[in-house]
Every structure is written in structure tokens, then in C-alpha cells.
Image 1 (tube, one colour):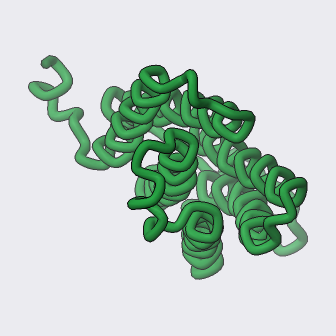
Image 2: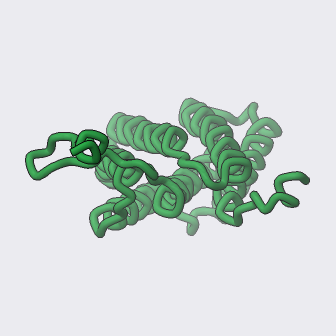
Length: 212
């Protein structure tokens, strides 16, 4: 309650918090139907648990440290999303599902590049067009990959298939978490005292300049 009274609450925290809640519900759904699980189910469950924890930490970090940079969790989330894409790429390649494999491979590449832009954004505060473009493409390709693996139109024929619903949920929620991470980085992460560089890329010593 103190966070509300002191004006620390940020609506931005609701984004990752919602991801955490939906992932938590899917974990409960799995536990109620774990006798139907398969190897594919295990992969989705592990990433669902990790994603739920990271989402909760990110929401709490935004909530309690509203005026701070969240770059550490942003980078961890970026690594998590990239890892998910790599694992799903391998799984699809092993199962000869080449549509999902290609989309997950592209999503992984864009997600890995996006980590660089997260760090750059935290250092200079510049969210340029490339930052926005790679953020959008990463989330989009994860969604395309999820559709290739688990289309919602198969929902009626898989009404009791826990593997299908966990796969569908994890693929969409990871895409949403990637988008949430990009939004938080865009809105919050900056270095109030960035390293100033000269035309040759060398750090500028401000104190030395002031003495002169």
C-alpha cells in the first residue's frame, strides 16, 4: 500500500504482471492434467515457469523502482526469449515442421539483435527506428511461429489436449513478453549519465574539460 501512497505505481507494471498471471494459470492447468504430458509439453512447461517468474520480477521492479533503469531484467528477458526461439527451432527441425522452424529461427535472430538495442537504449536513451523495427519483428515472428505450430482453428479438435493448449499459450505469451520487454525498455531504460564520446569514439573527460 505504501507504493500507492507514495505515487510509485506505474500502469506499465500491469503488462508483465498480466503475462505472469496467464502463465500461472496455464501452469495450474498443466498440473491438473500432467498425466497427459509429453516431451513437447515439458519444453513448454519449463519456459512457462521461467517466463512467469521473469514477468513477476519485471512487474515488481517497475512497481517498486519506478524512476530506475530496468536494464538487467530487460537483458535477462531478452536472453530468455531468444533461448525459447532457439529451442523451438531445434524441436521443429527434429519433427520436420519447417514452417515453424523458419519463423522461430528468424524470431531468435531478431531477438538476439534486439538485446544489443536494449543495451544501446540504456546507454544513450535513443530508441531509434531500428529499435522499434526489431522489437516489432521479433514479436511478429514469434506470433507467426506460434500460428504455424498451434493454430487457434484446431482448438475445437483439441479441446482436451493439454499439450496443444500449453503449446498455444506458451508461444503467444512469449511473444507478448517480448513485446512487453521492448515497451518497458522504450519507456524506462536510460542512463542519466551516459558516457560521452568524441568523433573518434573515445570517452570525453568532462572534469578535465572543466578545469581547462
